[in-house]
Length: 79
Image 1: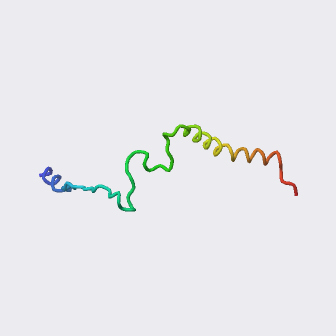
Image 2: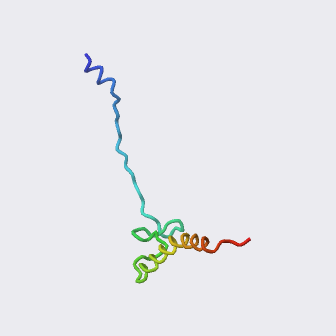
């Protein structure tokens, strides 16, 4: 008796298989761009000098605020 009540109490989830379909991107359209790895980057990481440019950018971008703070501490504004 209790087993029948437990079976009726559980919701029966019937999940239908969803068939997702995709179409190939139409490259002639102005709204589609080439697909694949590295195609969405605005730079080419496979160029010869990329590593030097990348690390220079990182060092300058991280160090510049600290350099400005140190410079301001040693050269206070004069009123």
